[in-house]
Length: 356
Image (cartoon, rainbow, N blue to C red; front, side, top):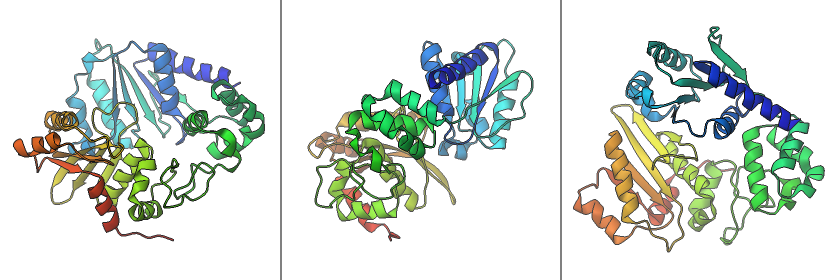
């Protein structure tokens, strides 16, 4: 049943893209809209030249119209507007699409949580969550440890609520780690540092992988007391910790998708007395793997090309001497900030926490 539903969804999206100028994909949060779209593109349109636009702090500051007008849409076969849920944002998008000439061959996809009262030349597709049977079908197709499915598929369904994105992440975790903790699994909801059995990690034990569900004050406090636990985080969770640190200091924060970010893991912005935007790149390295000059040069190139205010590189390790010398030689102290393990540890200790 899952396979049939999945193929039906993919076929619906594919047919709509081929036959319509605009495809509008909607559904409640967590129903797997982007998940289905990504799978469809990888299956049917992997040779298309694609532009993906997500709402970011940069667009908050510059405005959607400015961002859209700066794109040469004729270069792309497919343009995707993801996470554009605000009515004003969608009005701007539609106005932009309608302003294009009829000879423009670009196809457009808008992904939203809202049901849109669309015109007859816009095709709308609703994406639902998976049923319990469909979750079992998905696990049968994607889980290495198939002998565990009959025992635990209902537990997995209850934990993921049929959310395809959570189901995919959980399946990836189970395929890379032992599946025998599924019966006690709380990895998406437990607001603390836990091990693979769901037990709080001993502050003195830095050998075990940390599974993080929520970046909250309790977690930041634990890290401030034992900064070596930073090494147990996944690279993505390290990004989330850095993002939360900036958020607690009053910044608007946006984490880029985990796929391709172009050297930008996090956007941080502020727009009060003045407007500015920083790009943050996170490097979750071992202590002996230092960040080199190539990372500095790459981020500086992105910051300069996109005219951001500046860039920040945050790492669990340290920076090489050539990397630090490059900052001084090119007088970039006010454009590029280097935050190593010691700096991040100090910032964590300086934050105010509301712990239980």
